[in-house]
Length: 396
Ligand SMILES: Nc1nc2c(ncn2[C@@H]2O[C@H](COP(=O)(O)OP(=O)(O)O)[C@@H](O)[C@H]2O)c(=O)[nH]1
Ligand SMILES: [Mg+2]
Image (cartoon, rainbow, N blue to C red; front, side):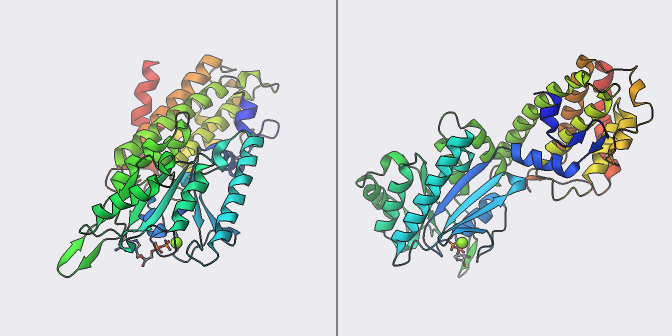
């Protein structure tokens, strides 16, 4: 990717203006998404399930964007997570809910074909059935049949489980789904979950089954859905190691792309502008890495961090200018590192900045909380970065 394409309108080499908001929008647009369709009657526990599974706070009453009367879409930009929530499955006219869903899937499919991106279609469907209901309804079978027409793998989630009831009903449910032609869509993926811990008499029933649901869902991604699967691993809040591994995997790819783009900066028609372009690319990379670690919300001062980090590197003067979003008027930018920066230097430097920053954030990753917990003091983050980056610089 050339630098112009990489920066995609966020940087004006003539005026030296760096548009942070545009850069962040580009980052979101490029972020791999996981798109999950939630199916099941009201009150079965769909919201509670996703809250617990993804560590989000989807409102009980729903505050998503109503797509139709029966379908709501929730977008969690920082997580790359999109949830489709069906409503009114249990209503007398559930046929209209099914028709709505079919419509929405048709639209998403048409869009996927025109944009050559399958991200608009749900990658996975979770069909939630309250375990204590003890029965499979016709509408539940029809839902599975409907989504299987779109090749969306289904995982049946028995919600609000009470361990004494379970297995017999699960066996019964399997037989019913199998004898109704649902086995290709479900492929024996049944999970029993309790999303909310509760007390019954003296006993406490903890949250359970989310790990099984995680494994079954991971296995359901078809070959070739590597990005969606990685996005799923990143978004979930169940398996800390898998989450971190997925973040690191994405970061590696993104560092590579940014570095290649930085390598093309010397081709800019504006003399002396390569250093600011590289700074804009590296700033974008730092915001990208923040976004991979879901730090967008926590890092209101991300410009200060980007500036601080670039200040440690060979682009020190540039780093100072980043914070003002004006990269043109950098004292001595043209003479930085002895005039024009070679493609090799630009690539190596960007790789080093990216990897050192990822290491920095990883060092603050809390496996219990499944997230990075940053020190209050920005300087501490930058010091950690410097401690990791400086040896890299010497060895290169
Ligand atoms: N004990 C327990 N309660 C749950 C569970 N899932 C949902 N609930 C409760 O059931 C009610 C409905 O859940 P909600 O998630 O809003 O269902 P939705 O309409 O399908 O989104 C809420 O009061 C939840 O607290 C669960 O797994 N265990
Ligand atoms: Mg709900």
